[in-house]
Length: 423
Image (cartoon, rainbow, N blue to C red; front, side, top):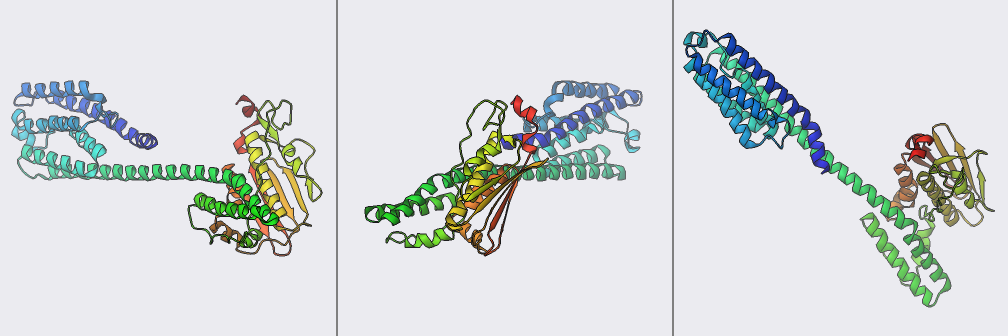
């Protein structure tokens, strides 16, 4: 359905233009017959053809308003009317007028029939229809007169060019439709992968670590959880992952986890409660401060404005989840004594949240390597979330000097707090 809508949106102006062209040129052809009524050798024949042309237009004027109505059978009949008019011209007009370059009975209305073939079938159909009109004009004139050849070439070049442009436009539309489908599928896959990363993979990683710590039968359970984590990461990323973890209880996992990405927790729930500031109030907006407050603790300092920092509830929830992912990385990789700071800034056009720690930092190239291994914390839980919100996530890490993650969410998706309330 999406591809059809796109095709119609581009072709519809062409069909409307063709409809107007056929109507105006039909009026022009009738006017020429009226003005030359005293010069025809057989005026009855001219009037008869004109009557047929007018009747045909009255019955079929709307057949070229859309590609569905303009069938191949109609195009053939329309071209037949035009060719018949051209070939009847020598029978109703005088040879002197024909030699002087007098217009045929359908005149320039004939080009409308050819353009219908061009828009419907492309340049090949246009070339065939133009060739038939050229033959009919040469037969009507009786020779290759210069003005006849000029008119024939003009119609041929114009119709073929329009047909080619239509084909290129259709190919572009199909490419765009496929790109949109791929983009939609990719976004949905990222959303599902992000949800899996923030829930199932976290649980499997925790079971693996705890099993290795407890030992015994729990060690085997942890090993199995590690294998399932690898398989699930492979499914999420659609690519290969490092070698399977050892059966000895995940000795490899400790090394890998130590260099892993940001693996964030499940975002705190955004409940529907009345009141200004939330978490979610009656207007559907949420105070970001209320969602970030649970993260504050002995090793996490939170600095925020005194006034509510309002965003749509869904946007605020995703932002809080990204902050949680950054903090979880601090917990897992910066060391037990690492300190983290959260800074919330409410700007005029965006909400900016910065998460900084004093840990050892991230080695250069580690994030890209972790993404190739199927560890998508930064790619999905942080950058993916911010990209979906129309924002951006910037990560700055210097070995030995800690890591800083800057999350910026623009206010454009919010439109206005009044409009959000109407929704």
